[in-house]
Picture (cartoon, rainbow, N blue to C red):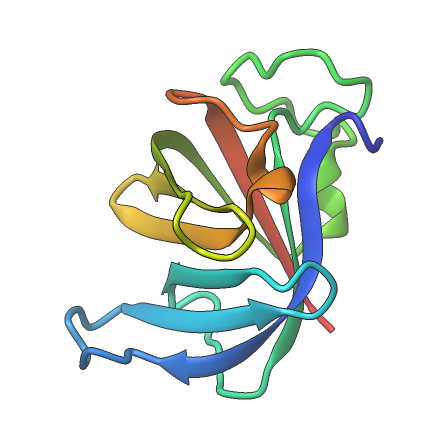
Length: 145
């Protein structure tokens, strides 16, 4: 299972819509992780998965939902067990930008993923995001704690 999940941590929501509400059904949240000291901006469909300041959730990034690690076909198979069964909210997207800041104390890196227009920026120590590649397809999986 660990080879399927590329990154996983527990996050706490710090702010919602820090630049003001832009869309009716989308909330941009700022969250900080507890174990890896990562910072995240994430757009979430608030109509189906409402978030609140102080909410604690686990977030994972995976390259496939297949439990055996085989690449995702892009088709949904009803009744088939998958990684998504263990989470409440799942999105599929593409990593479109990787940047690093060598000037900061300790190398910091950022990855940017678009989930059909809902965006994620994950920033932290470069070692936590070194396994990601440009144009990589990623699943984001969330579950409130």
